[in-house]
Length: 568
Image 1 (cartoon, one colour):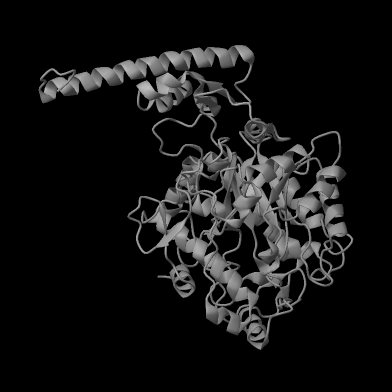
Image 2 (image 1 turned 90 degrees about the horizontal axis):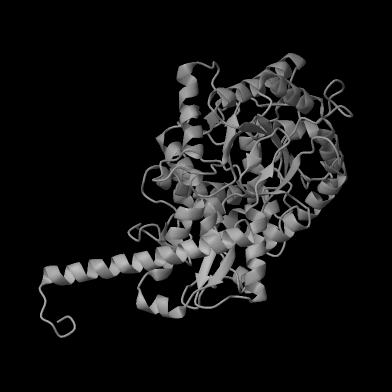
């Protein structure tokens, strides 16, 4: 029956189509009016909320969604941040949220001239997806990075790409080819395309910058999986052995360190020249493959970080103290000479390495000031720790980002004129409130997000959604949510921590399981078994299957994660 008139199924289908057409037309007219108001009032960049007659919502099902579709069609990507509601929202919390979103979505120009579309950076993560013994990107990388490419990031940095095949970190590293030919460059060119032009129905209007991270693992390249076999020794600035500095580590931990990390051999000056040239070759690879730039890894106890630490650099001139920055400056200078003017050159440095006799915050601050004075760097990422203190991140606090206090000191110490590198802060950044506070205070201009990006490839969409969670959505389920009750927060699960790990009493294995677990998740994304959680999926759920279309995190134990990492 339709208005008490007998109708056939085709007639009812026709009436339904007409009603949908009328509703769509009404929504589109509302979209045009809203777009005109937003443009006239200059509210497009900051986002806003506009009240709509509530009867329209009730009269036409899906009316709000159709309005938003129309706004995106008319205003482009910025139309996503023009919200409609049944009343005008003037709540202070909502206004603050829109302000935070506008701040974090604001593009920023690097000294080289390239523009970062927004402030969120997918920080470098070890993927563990290359062939055994290291190699070029493959289809698994392409799938993983396509997800990040369309995830709304301002910049995407690859996992560390090693410059030396005899110094791999965990055996499945991306590797800079010995020779740059069309054949060896092609896989990296495809990777850059996955980041900047992922396969989406609508081409990205503001694609992220694509950055290759270049690294030399040095003495932290363990036996067997490093590419040197069991007998070969790693190279380092000085012959200083890697050892555990965790106060809680016991005998088993010390034995593991001695087994995996023999005393390295000291580099000769000729070998240092080869390393410098290898970093430059990595930058040339990035240029030829269509990447926007490179990040030089001088943190976490890898080779360049060892040159910067008085504990591990016992050399004399030209690379010993007080000339410890010479190798980094030479690499940066040579890259600038080999690359176009608008090529991005960043660096990742330690705020401290948290071991006795190592880099202190005051020394690290002097390094940042001197590197900034060169006028050749576009951004400096602040990080910290190394394999001797793999538990340094265990003191995570959702109220406070890692290294924020050092980032503040670094930002204050940078030159006020000339090409000044941007400060990038990474670590424990989970909420929009904290991120906006850091940017607004001038402590950092770029914000790096690492492991949460594995769980939520489109993590920026969560941060850029100014609407508070409704009472029906299960967002407010974690301790961190209690700190920001009016903010939509993506819960980030912890990697598995087996009971037997406490018996072994070694932080290195715990850190290794954490890395392996995230690698195992990326492996499943790369092989099409999982696709990460959608921003609206709420509380993560562990499960053995992926039947919920991205709503379930695969259940992977600690041992299985390690086995997966070194599968054939």
